[in-house]
Length: 85
Image (cartoon, rainbow, N blue to C red; front, side, top):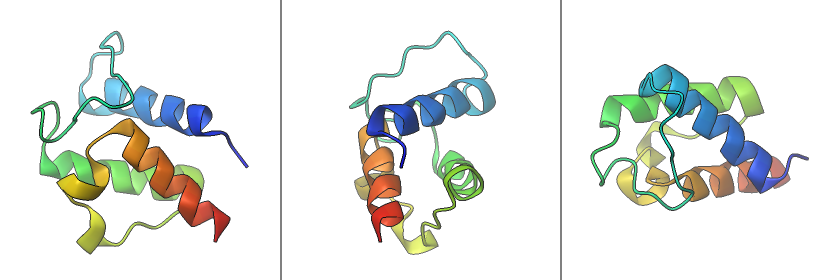
């Protein structure tokens, strides 16, 4: 299984390149992505699709919320917890 750091790195690369379109933007693991205004709710759907295609983890639409998906840490933890099931 991939490490948390590896999952975060893939998520960060995707967000930088495909959502922000700024590969040099520095995203910290605990930086608030949605509540901090960096990405919008539509971007969360893009992230969920990326997670499913890259890690084989499905995150239900009802869980695509600020409370569940606001930081790289939260998203990576979710991916790893689903993979452990």
